[in-house]
Length: 256
Ligand code: NAP
Image (cartoon, rainbow, N blue to C red):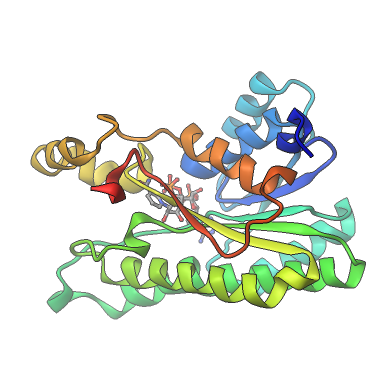
């Protein structure tokens, strides 16, 4: 396979969590542009993403699904319902995630539990629900997890986030090892510093913001579309021999 169709998502149905804004929105738009039908899952209105998808890929199928993914059982039920009512799903993007900031000595238990539950536990159980369907149907499929540069680095004041994102890297490897032989490619993207709600606090801190920017070889913060295009690659036939990789898309941050 060497033509451009290796990079196409035509005929594929891709479910993206946290698709109403930020990186998830960028992935939904990029996947639709590559030809996919989008199932956009989250707890907020998907109207803005629907409009962006229509502008980028007029006529692309777009199904908004409301679900609070903090409850992993609700997440699994959502996936079952989306599969049964809308038909098979070819790719799952575990993107929804949260961050909480506090010094480690003061870090509250709720900020530990909420972050680890959504970023790690729901990622696992949603992947499990998805894998049960694809294995039963005998279909090949893709899972793309959104990790972080904090899957490789420690960070500051984000204990539960760093733990959860290191966990996402490990889980990506474990699931790849167990599921590659079942036709499921499991990989992850480690975004660097991207302009989204997740980084509002950092960007509002002039000193931190300048120091981060000065360390990015590309000389700019990332945009959601930078991650979207990398996700298309991991969802498309072109990446068929990739299993268990966590790819930095970070403007060179981790290369320093
Ligand atoms: P964001 O703009 O805050 O987006 C987070 C998404 O997750 C939103 O759609 C949010 O929905 C959704 N979400 C949060 N809690 C949810 C819940 N309980 N149920 C359903 N959806 C929920 O931040 P982002 O930067 O795009 O983050 C997307 C992913 O990228 C996260 O996994 C994050 O850790 C990762 N990441 C981001 C960066 C970065 O620099 N921005 C870097 C590395 C990794 P609401 O809008 O309704 O809250």
